[in-house]
Image (cartoon, rainbow, N blue to C red):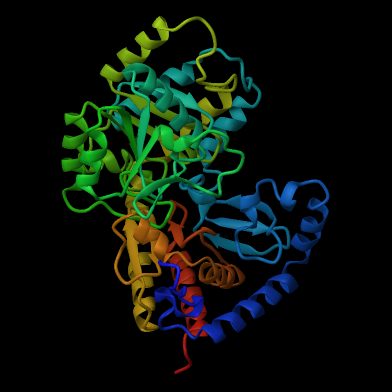
Length: 467
């Protein structure tokens, strides 16, 4: 945009075509009033929390639901969340994937109850750890594994290992990516140039010195970036998910892998979100062969934990790098890494929760949800699209699915998202508060899907022109 151009008024954004924006704003005001009226206990707790919690919540993201004050949960079970005012809501957010296989799955709950009297953390190896590693190797096809407490840490650790193993310093990511809060990934393309993300707090060194960023689905840009010979690894989701879903073009990953290998670069797949595809994740289902794989949130049924695996070749290089390094802290791991509670939870989740029968239930139901949303969008004449990756469904405010992070970001509309999400919440349904992501879990029912579709239809009817 040049200095003489005028920004597009928010009411004229492409994603708002077909809406009556004045009606939508009136709807939002009514929904905020309704939320405040129907949730007095949450209001009281939010007031109390403001005295001692920064932003009044355990994490500032918890204010991103578009509500006048934070919703406070009493308990969650299966596909339902019950708040402190006694309202039961169908949960399609599922902890933004942390509870992708339902809240408090029974095998995990039983394993935690058993472990609760047998110790929580010792900084020693356990039988469970060896069994979890075996289960991971069988499932994902990589022979060697290590643990972390979050996908952020797992991504940070695998990048450290690879830099140490290869002697190369740079990391390549895709524009608009999200891999937790590992600092290296917060570099965006702005007018074709890498720029450190302005929203990143407290960053004191220039990330662009060691992070290369290109657009997803751009093979030529990937080839050019890797041709410099200084990139250690490509860190990627097989499908971009956190800026709105961006699917790979047909044939993209086979060609991308050829380019990556030709330049002697390693490929890391972050499957934290795309485990929604199948028990072995998106990469194995679609024939992608990474050198390393990261999986966070759902691998322990919602208990804080994460894992990262390596090929035999990378593992040998990593072990040698550690042996060649001077004594001292490697910068990898914490004293709680591989703790006994996490190991027990992961063993139960992998063996009894993240199973083929679970996906056999989730995937058809997610397809029904996706088709129902498409029908609702068409019924109300809206230029939006719907994307499905296994049990994960999302609608975006653009007519065609975006091909890269820039296109996906252009379709985002926080104000529109918030009023839709608040309208759904007031009608007994939760979806993820940022963009419009929904997950189906093993406890989700056809009635739950029908509930969401009915609520969405009501919301869309209230923000589109009267017929």
